[in-house]
Image (cartoon, rainbow, N blue to C red):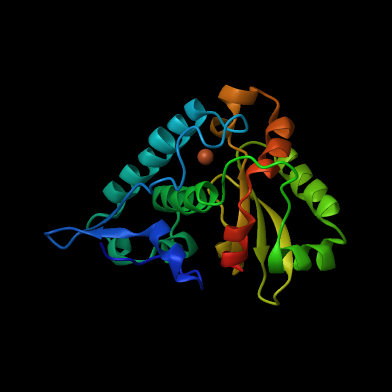
Length: 218
Ligand SMILES: [Fe+2]
């Protein structure tokens, strides 16, 4: 296994965008392994949703990207660089891999009164006045994003926290930001469990955020 790709400052996160070195020297992306059991996020995200979302949707993006980059300049390019520079199908599939890898690795089992801790808690209080105010703005931006996409918390080039809406496969690395936290608002992320009630799904996600992971991404 050769680790290349998204360059978080914390080396424990290198694995999320790893390539596998094949015998014939072709680099292949792999489906990430979830850092929890398939039913660990219930009732916020069901085992069934997780099975489709990770095992079918993300797996398809991985297979698509491996097929599209074979024999191209993207073949040995880190994932983040592909997202910053590619367009069309290569961008769509690479963006969705980067987005989902960040999404799936930021969760843990539901916890009552789950709140930010450490440095990210201080930054949120300083820049959004309170966690409640931040949560309201973030959830609203997810609920009002038209169509498919993602809402993100990132750090911009000046070290300021930013909440952005990115449509389809968009990722804040395209703006030069460092992504910290994301909610997937594609219907495949919630339709089995919540049908059309996207705001209910987004409000429930706060129970399963692993703030230790968000702090490691700072
Ligand atoms: Fe998704």
